[in-house]
Image (tube, rainbow, N blue to C red; front, side, top):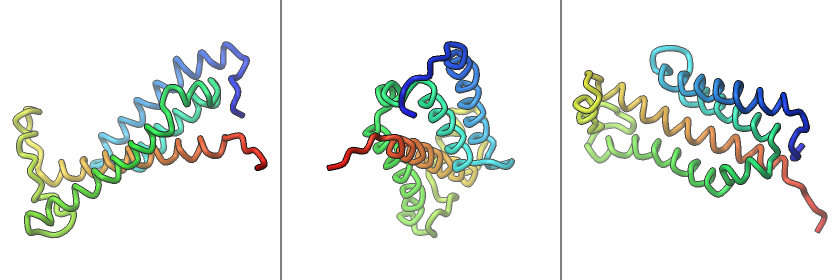
Length: 152
């Protein structure tokens, strides 16, 4: 299923109504993940499902031009890197791995205009890293599963 679907209505509904709603819902799940059910993994899976749905209806070749596997590999690496950095920075400060209280994110309170603790910001940073990693890996898996294999 790598060719574009012929239905104009299906393409319109998916591209204009469903995929933007899925992306917004995924970001909502990410942002509210520390206080309610959700988080980085769930948000990454939701947004990846939206992109896979778009690739199913518009065709894999068109979707590959929009965001290539190479870019997705870089994003997956960046997601893992964000998670690892959020764990190593506290180690360098002399506390435990992933001890968010040691993260230097006080500047965020001045920029955002409201108070958030270092722990809350640390959790959000880790969730963003997980979100980027899960989203990228799931789309890469879909891309590899839909490749046309040839007998060599």
